[in-house]
Amino acid sequence: MGIRFEEALGLTPYALEVKLARAEVIAGNLANVDTPGYLARDLDYQAVMADVSAAMQDGDTASGPQGEDLLYRMPFQTAQDGNTVELQVEQGKFAQNSQAFDTSINFLTQQFRGLKTAIEGS
Image 1 (tube, rainbow, N blue to C red):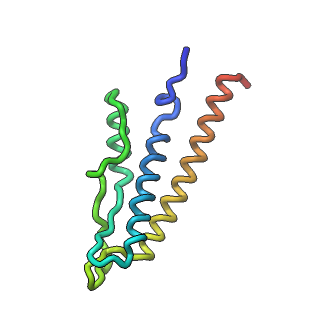
Image 2: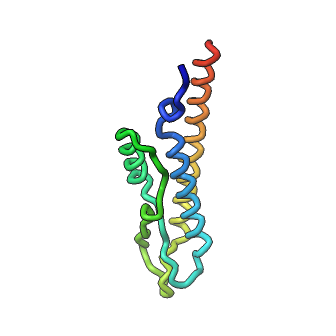
Image 3: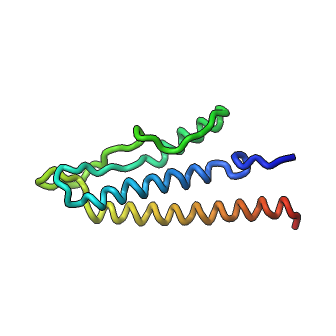
């Protein structure tokens, strides 16, 4: 009997993919903090994961975030040049996403340890 990693690991690999994509989007916002007219973007993690979960339950091949999953961030105050990136907000979102990524890596590590124990025995 073989191990199906999709079943054994569940949504964790997709969660990592979404968190990585979100880190790239937030990093792009940070890189453009001084670009006139730049509109800050973000990825709705919960919506993307709901789509992935629904696809997996339907037996479809789940995919990670797509371009249409990007949303515009609503700023507290838009700059005079039209830029909507707020440095402190983006730094906070990046740190929060980084911590969530680390947590997912730890969870995935535990899942692999469990699989290893199941294969090798106690």
